[in-house]
Length: 175
Length: 309
Image 1 (tube, each protein chain N blue to C red):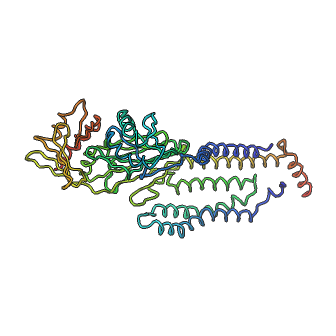
Image 2: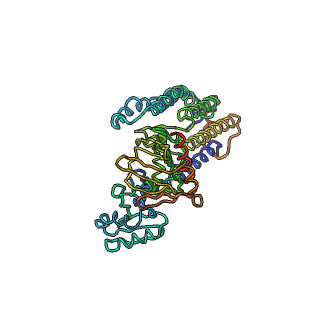
Image 3: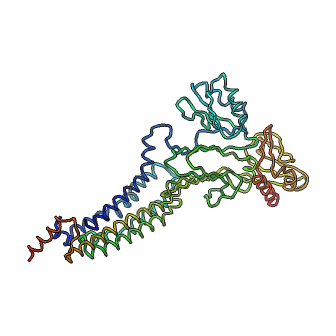
């Protein structure tokens, strides 16, 4: 990929990001809430209490709606840009807050109730892993910004000769 | 190499390492298509509590099962003995004499073939809750089983601490929980019923807790003050007589009543009849010696019931 492409904002890419976020954070819980859950309740019968699952899916959907907006700039800005660092940081921070809120801080107490039997699930470990993954991704975003700055300042990192030459060629074309 | 590329490689390595550590044990278990399939349920294989059931009862119960299954092996403790109709009585006597731990019958394929419905328990003294929890070692870290009394339709948080067993298993296993029947009856008199909480965890990542309160009918209590009689009504008991400590215990299956009678306060007389802190309950030729903690809990329950009435 050339350096020129990386420097440009892409509304199309932003829209793709928003669509993906809309599917994950709105469409999936909506489908589960409006269709699949009803079928499950019909199949299992009266003993099944879906209140807590419905509440979880509603939290998932309502708190997830802003993710659609936040995903747009996070995807739109090019790699290595300050806009991407800021928008991605906001997006990641909100997604962690979203996860904690939806899962009630990882403690899904009485998530399933059926004929008096209650199932509770704790997923704190999974949340920790998710946060680790986000942090690692955040480091990549920061490193891309760092690399880009270096490139702009003319002190190219070693070992990426193809991209360095490409960058010089582009600049030459612009001039 | 760009720092972003290095960061990306590190991220991939970390995520792959986490995935391998988490998923590999589980997938390797799934690939083992053996007898290690995970089973969690209440309609489960039964393990005999040998010390209570005794050899005759065991032999009677196993006779039909063994007759229809060649190559059965009775496992108890570290022992494994092939069982046939000819040596059934001897094996059961051995298993009973061994007397420690539980026994389980497996067929030629190694599957546990006893199921709860095939067995008849003598509930005069103790009642059994059998619970099969077999999870392959690598799929769980531990299984916690908490047994206690639930407020009716209550949850684990409502459990009243009681002398039923609460066990933590390092790995998947099968258990039989043996509860003194009299205690069940008395605690039922507090409008509580027996409940279970099963907690299964995996690598600190996910913890699933299943709370199963029992909604069985509860009994009522009635203390007659002329001669102190503690009547616990509404319990499905076999008829018979016995003792709680030194005091008379009668069970009337027709009126579904357990009666403990003595002169003076029952709780005080039970305290007097403790041997090394242990209370012995006997009925219909069977006896069960409770450990000191359980004995103390029984006396406290009786005391509370006397006070309530």
